[in-house]
Length: 110
Image (cartoon, rainbow, N blue to C red; front, side, top):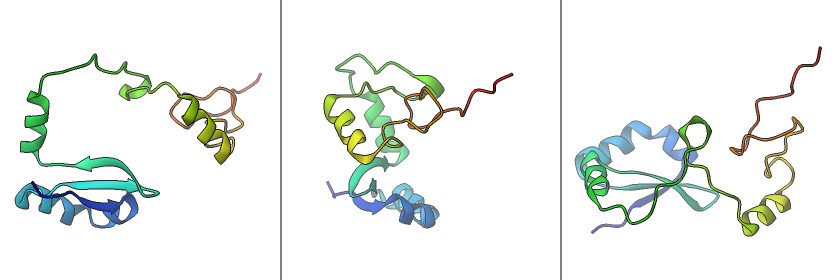
């Protein structure tokens, strides 16, 4: 099995059509990275079907707002977010965070 092409998200955005063609017709796999860490992958529909056919070994994550799987913060994640500042921790000065790294904005007052 060949190793996935690793590419930054910003570069992938500029080359999306080419990457989709390489994945769909050449069977390549692409790993999208942000800050040097794997974030997501582009795989062929054939590979996706094979993955979906694998037996589920654990309960699926609970769905949060907007259908995203919600990940509970671990002590390490909280520490890392705190080190990056309040915005990385989800505090944008708008009150409570949605847990997705952004919030709906300030609540209007009357």
